[in-house]
Length: 102
Image (cartoon, rainbow, N blue to C red; front, side, top):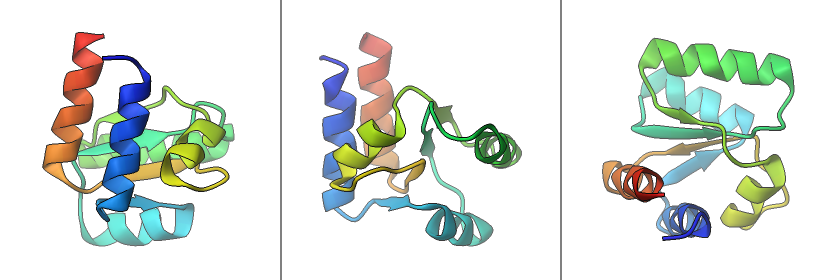
């Protein structure tokens, strides 16, 4: 599968209601729950990136930094997105499987 397959899966997860995006929503969600996978924009600010890297490490969440804000946003039907949580284990596994085969 191509790299675009990960973005397609991200879009499917969004349409299925299995993502959380945006700093406020992500922070609120992570205070109550943990997630199987997160995306962080590769071109986000260093302060924001550092905060989410620490949080992901504390909660043992795999963190992928392979797409830009625009690429993540486009996959979700938005203009930009700095951080995206995948809340469903099935979608997280499918994304990790695609990345493993590339």
